[in-house]
Length: 326
Ligand code: UFG
Image 1 (cartoon, rainbow, N blue to C red):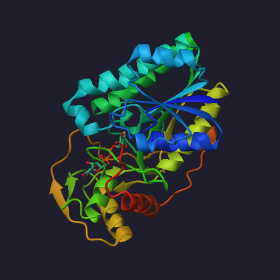
Image 2 (spheres, rainbow, N blue to C red; image 1 turned 45 degrees about the vertical axis):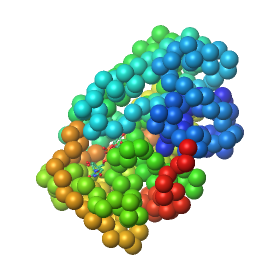
Image 3 (cartoon, helix red, strand yellow; image 1 turned 90 degrees about the vertical axis):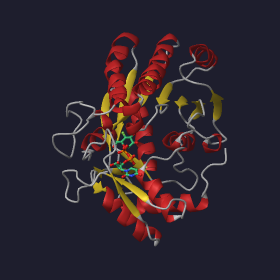
Image 4 (cartoon, rainbow, N blue to C red; image 1 turned 30 degrees about the vertical axis):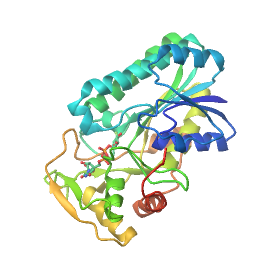
């Protein structure tokens, strides 16, 4: 298949590019490099540096290649920032996807895999969360993902685009080649590992008064290579004609304190914690039911322990103490 990966220079996108190439697909990456890294893009993939909202450039690209499918990872991802600057999220996450879907219709590309998020659920009534739980985002980031999800059936109806919308829980870990390098970094695991490397004095712990056993938020961490493998399966499933929405999580929840403690064990380094007020837009608890993805896509996460996830990230951070160089 000829696949266009939008956002393929980012953390998760770069891993899916590697896996698509391994599976003998032909890959073009479209990335503005605002958040992505040139070095993270596999050399066997073609890299086009542009914003998905640049409709002229997108049209030229679509016209000159006959893509079979588009995979979208091009969204901004910081829930906290989105509360302070919602326009940035709606413009890029909804605007970029709209431009892309319009171009797909115009150039007859019929398969779409969308990186959605657990953030569409907001604060769920109960966990584990199944896909039919109501969408009630508590931040504009989640709202932007839900808006695109609600657009997809209309594009399917009028433009024949088959889609798989993948609701990621907390992507974490690294492969031998690719790891997490956001600037600024806002995610818990890389921040804890930066503290272990001595690059930060302390880990700010946002909120210790949540209604959870230890008062800190609970999240479901899923290894980035398991997320990527679900995309390959979803691409095939969208090709077969079934559109659908799937949770991608491990099914297990860990509190922020448990993550910090586990990272301390894995790294063998002292990690200082600084308790801070809650961060805006954080739901107390997000844990996936992953039964639907297992049953419908035949997905089976391979990395199942938090230790193994953190250990893979730790190895990457040690070999890339300053992250990517370009
Ligand atoms: N946290 C801290 N200190 C930090 C960073 C994070 O205490 O320095 C806390 C957060 O407040 C939150 C938890 O750690 O309680 C996890 O925060 P992350 O920023 O690592 O991840 P989020 O859960 O906010 O968001 C991530 C992705 C989203 C996705 C969501 C789904 O960034 O794209 O997981 O669960 F939608």
